[in-house]
Image (tube, rainbow, N blue to C red; front, side):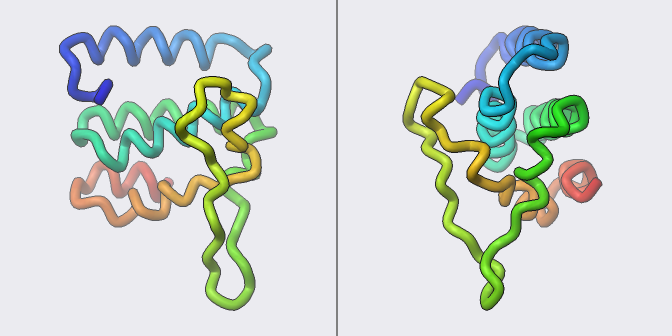
Length: 122
């Protein structure tokens, strides 16, 4: 819902400054925000999705310990894996984001908006 609010630009700018500017954040915090941003990109408008993908990309580049979110793959027979991310908790330590994967990026590669699709592929 945040991508549809009146002050979304201000909120996203402050979020970006808070997350990218702070190098002392633990990996589970960055991983949780990456998962939540990618899920917002799936359900939100293209303008918000582009910002969420760009911020996720910057966070993953800056915090190499979260690269496991991209490189984790499913089982050998069908390539699928269960997403263990717990979205409904307020404590980021309990989201299990580091045990999950960013499968949302694969879905965003097939997005109807060409810019989102291209950014998800890169």
